[in-house]
Structure formats: structure tokens, C-alpha cells
Image (cartoon, rainbow, N blue to C red; front, side, top):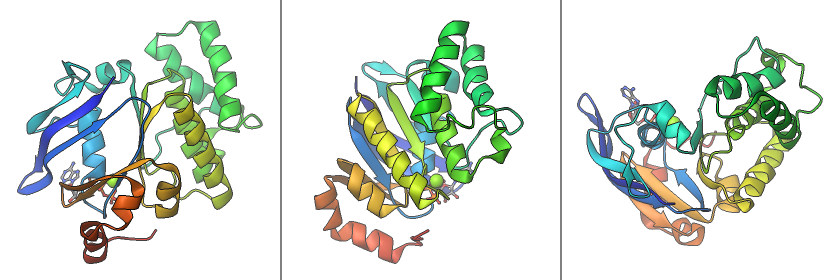
Length: 241
Ligand SMILES: Nc1ncnc2c1ncn2[C@@H]1O[C@H](COP(=O)(O)OP(=O)(O)OP(=O)(O)O)[C@@H](O)[C@H]1O
Ligand SMILES: [Mg+2]
């Protein structure tokens, strides 16, 4: 099933955060969505996941237009996302963070939630922290937990906004491995990241935004040598961090 962004425009007052952006994500792809600070990456994810409504254009999942649906309906169609600033419940244990949203969502039975949470806990390598309150996790562990939370309902699409931000190098390679594993198992992944070494290592295709305009869409090799990309980064406020 293809996820299609068709000439999507999003304005904030006089600012055009997205200018007629068109891009498609095919099943099983691992795509990097990159661009300087403020280029519209998060806005695009917010439009796809229903947090923002586009001012123009449409977003389709297969044949169905989803750009008018509220976030929970889009999530139910198998499009999961993580946030630039992790959203976990600080005062709940790691296991409860995994279980409570899944129970509330209501698609899984109680025993399925129990089993799945154990499985995910292992996948995100937090098996020794099941009872730890989320507030006591490191930044990187919180990112892993947030990813685990959306994996509870097994979405087909994972839209990940800066999952490596503030993550310790050792945990970063663990997270990279986990994403590659999920992709091998069939997940379509759209990865927003400023971590160029990781992006170039793990993505098979890169989409580059600059000032709300999609400037390039191609293989990492093609993008690496694209002058417009080099200009976007050198000319913009690109921040290595
Ligand atoms: N809710 C909003 N209200 C007003 N302006 C916004 C809003 N969200 C984003 N913007 C603006 O839209 C532009 C694109 O922002 P966006 O957050 O999508 O960039 P980004 O590529 O994710 O940047 P970063 O790499 O820093 O996360 C920026 O100029 C930003 O200030
Ligand atoms: Mg952003």
C-alpha cells in the first residue's frame, strides 16, 4: 500500500512551511527525510498524521484520501509516528507505558497486550527496566520506549521524527539496528534526522526539503552529489547537532 503526498501546501500566517510537496512512500521502503532546520520536515509528518490539516493538496493511503481524518483514525490505518521530543508518561513504568495506550486503544485483548509488551520490551532492549519509571530513563532509552509504544499496535508505516536526537552513540547503533530489523520485517520507515552518517548508512532513498520545497528525491549516492542539496545545507542554518 502506497502513502502519497500530493501537492501538499501548509501555511502558518505568511510563512509557507510546505509548498506543493509531492512524494510517495512505497511499501517496505526505508526513506530518509532530511533538510535544514525549519525546512518543513516535522510539518510534513504532522500533515500526514492528521495533526495539521494541509491548506492545499491531499494525502492518500492507497486509493483513500486521509488528509481530512483526525489523528486517531489515521493511526488506526497503520501509520505510527514518534515525536521530536519524546512523548512518554514520566510517572508510569516502562511496561505500563507500553501497555496502557494499547489497552486504551482497544484493538488488542488484555493477554495480547501482556504478551506483546514483553516481546517489545526485549526488542527495545529495556528488559531490565520494565518496572523503572520512564522519568528515570536516559534520553535514548526514552526514544526507544516511544518507538516501542507505537510498535505495540504493529503499524505498517513508521514516521520517526529525530529518533537519534540526544541519544548516546552506543544506544544509537542499537536503535539503528532495531530500525533496520523492523524494515527487513516489512515496515515502511520514514526517518527524519540530522544524523547524516546514520541516514546515509541505513536509508535506501532520501527526500530533501529546503524552505518547504522538495528539492531532491533519490538514492543516497545521487543526493550526496546533488549541488542543490549541498547548497541547501551550506546556505541554510544547517546544524550538525
Ligand atoms: N505550529 C506552527 N505555527 C507556526 N509556525 C510553525 C508551526 N510549525 C512549524 N512552523 C514553522 O514552519 C517552518 C517549518 O518548521 P518545521 O518544524 O516543519 O521544520 P523542521 O524541518 O522540522 O525543522 P527542525 O529540523 O528544526 O526540526 C518553520 O519556519 C517553523 O517555524
Ligand atoms: Mg522538526
